[in-house]
Length: 368
Image 1 (cartoon, rainbow, N blue to C red):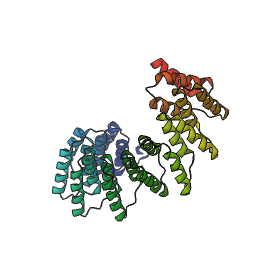
Image 2 (cartoon, rainbow, N blue to C red; image 1 turned 90 degrees about the vertical axis):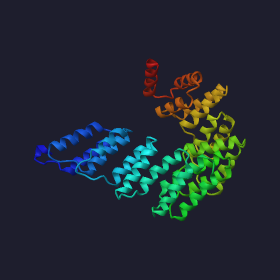
Image 3 (cartoon, rainbow, N blue to C red; image 1 turned 180 degrees about the vertical axis):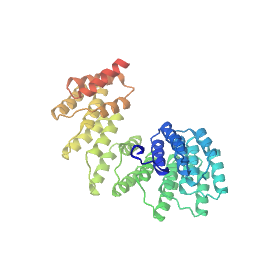
Image 4 (cartoon, helix red, strand yellow; image 1 turned 120 degrees about the vertical axis):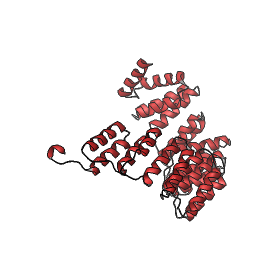
């Protein structure tokens, strides 16, 4: 720009500083600030807010606080205080958080929902539900409308302590306020019901989630499998799939994959195989994750022939084990080093793993 006779203004500098801070490149951001000041342009509150955000993002609250005290030629605003409050919350310093909120109000800057959400999150993380509710009442008194983050934070907190009645009350208030439950809302409630062994409610919440067109993750299905297994009712998973069909919901490979994978992880290979057979009957073909999960589960259960059959089927269908699958398996079964070694030997023998991954494995052996 300068080479062409175009000199950056404060907006250009602020954009660059903000970009560097968001990417965690604080040294570069400070270099731009220095260059900016040497060109005769002094920082405004946008500049300071970006730099403070960068420090808070990295947990460097001492530097953030120092910069806050050194602000010259600008006045701290809502963004400044909210950024600092969020930073101290993440650092588990609630005392400083509350002090900053008081200072903010004393200067006529009244906290909005974003500020309250930061404090609420920290109170809930510490299990201080009563204090969290007091804060919620304070928001109501000050006419600050809660948003999805507010409600989800409380729902998650109640689910963690097994108070599902209160969690549902928050969900109902959320609906009354015109807020729509999102994926996080449903996941928290499903997890809570599964932990509380209220599987019918967990199922119902799953169907609400699906009708709202959210896709449950592997974790969500894992909680359901674990919940059924903890009650000694593995057959309920099959009934769940029948209920999918009854409600006209599509059951694709992602559903079967998640359920089979979790049963394999829990060493319930018979249940996994039953689901696999049902899947094939429906005309749904397994993918690399399904076959690899079953093969490993059979090997671990002392049935190498069945494991070999699964890997042979992979070979016939030209299904490969990707680096993502390889890493995921090593992480999931880190305690089974001897079995893992045998398993990967069987995989390599059949050429089910790419040269890239083989090089990766060789490099790991060199480094170990």
